[in-house]
Image: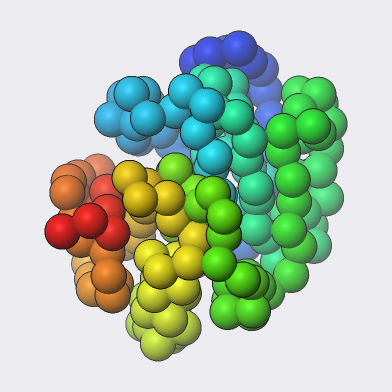
Length: 186
């Protein structure tokens, strides 16, 4: 895996050694970031189910102000910490380890909120944990998203899940993968 554009263009990042995470392909990542380009400058980014941090690190490379990575898998956390250190972005990249469902449920209203929030759960969560994902979306939309913030929801195109208080503004399919760009604004 590598950073594809910006300050760290071409730099390799450590990738997962197991199938616990699903790295996004360069082609899809480029397409997603082409859409996000106008929103990245000085943005606050949340990377949920971050894995080894590909999306948040790409955001940092392209000029976001800071990225917060949420990951529960210990092996992915270890690689993510190494990736943050290798790019020397410890001052702009923060890891929140543990259960992100609990973190978002307990966290108080965010003063600033995320401008861009990557919601990239394991595909099986859409069928195994839909209530948890809907509750997470509710917490994100009402307490953790800036007024003009975007949620980028990546999932299997064969599965659909309406997320409360988030409305699609763009939907793109890449083979069996769907990327939805969602807003809390109606």
